[in-house]
Image 1 (spheres, rainbow, N blue to C red):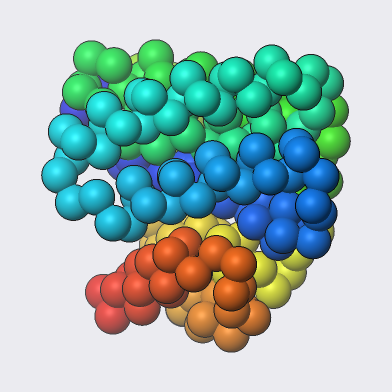
Image 2 (cartoon, one colour):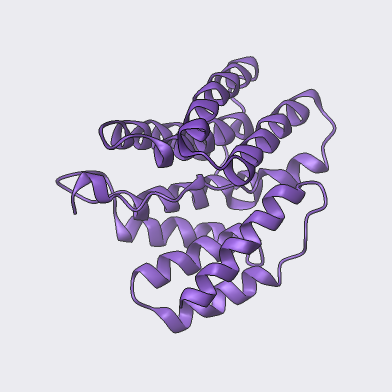
Length: 216
């Protein structure tokens, strides 16, 4: 697979984004700081239409996220969201920058996972799973179907009914050619409880689930 054909469509990443429910129940200063990054990520991801504008805003948000990580050393939640922002930045970057950003996102998320593998209902595991199946494998990148499967199973064990966990695992299964199983997880994603604390993300992610189901 050529580098320019990376299947980047992350979350929040990357990627990806399960910290919302945990933060919503927590009124601590750290939770408020993380939720601010969370909400700005959702705005950029789902409400900013221009790809170049998305990339520039994500690059600025990455700096804010890193400052929060530095403000709360040794905490998994800020690292998780810094990794998610960098993952999303990789999805919007030029071909030459994609792999470097994806590798950096993986390393940040791995730190969050090492601190607390259960953080945000499996959010770090899920985000790592996304990176491992979106990035090409050797000799181009670090992608690995086996590692993606492992991290997705961990994430689903933590939150088997979560919107993101089921969406990304369904997407993974569809990419692997398991369309019937993919539909089951995507339908389960739509059954997830709505999150009034994160309306932009909730609506945007459900639209992505419906679009993938229609495609399948």
